[in-house]
Image (cartoon, rainbow over all chains, first blue to last red; front, side, top):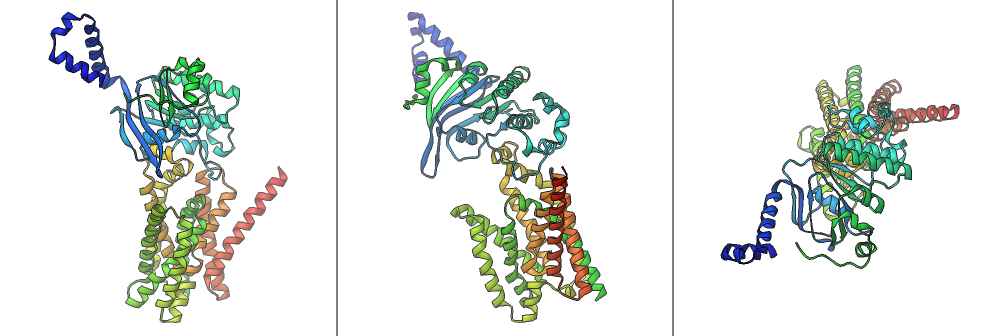
Length: 260
Length: 261
């Protein structure tokens, strides 16, 4: 809205710019906005709403994700975080816009998986597409290559999480959706998973979207922060998570941000 | 008699192999009982075949497949479980089938199987169908397994769960239809359940599980038919009993291994 008015003003009264020097700044800002919009963002979500069984789960969610950054998605239980991921994967009907860049290749690391009943080895889990390089994928998450003959259901929480990351990496994605990376992982394991993720981000320039409750993770390993509680409650620099007022805003009483 | 025994051995071996292979997925999906009950739905199709003079197995297959799709669809729309709907459908199918059969001998053959009716043509069809079923199952089983582990994961890998499930239902229908000749509609469900259950106990990875399940299916079908020839009784019950014997043997082996270790 603001952009449109500014744009109209600039178009209809160009001499305004000469009269008011600071409008030059607006013009520059507008230009930069148009320039970066096409290629710098790997995902743009606007006005996204999801309704499941007559209940509103997500309402007018807006955010953009720049290439190569790590975006933390935080919010109370039942805020619709996992639904947001499912919607981004096109599993759930929605209104509004989800715009992935044309070259996007998504890797997904789920929160809950059902391996209890399935006799499947690490190797088999990693090779549902032929031609995949298992050893490289395991090495990327710091697992030994003889690990591939183990059965998935006997792995510890941390090991399983690493195998799931390897499974997401094996198709060479440029975006990684990561649902609760530290659930079921002990403290030492957490740190090494973060380290692995950070390395992947820096070395392979993978964009990451992480759902998490872990404030330490948000602060140390992510760049931007999306507060979600049905609607967008915050969107900005993830370092601000340290401020108690922001935590109150994200986890406390819901105040939705306006549409952007 | 010897000829039909040999033909039925060929049918039994191929269908046992295919059903064991395919059934392993059904056991993973916790659909074992569904598969078992589902097989009874073939009965009206068999009856129509006998009544109208076309190959009853084709009628059986058609009924299985169409009702599988219908149940699958209704369960998606109504959110009733697949089990509930199959429970309702299979009794209805049995009722209609029994009414449609005018000839009690034909009904008996449909319910319990009749290897005297197995010809070289049906043996050939069984071999061809089993090969196709095994090859197609090989293609889709990884997709199904990934879908079982996590639906989102399957989606992110570009796997269409709906299409895969539909193909799977088709494969189950055609395998069950072929197996009916040997065991009849009442006992054919065994072939997709018990071999897989036995294999599941001793498998730590998918390939071992699938292969063992197929082998157990083959061995129980073949030994059941051979025993039935020897004792001059219906093969169906002996196929089931052989399969359960394998299950128990596997259980004992595992138990002893556990004691040793």
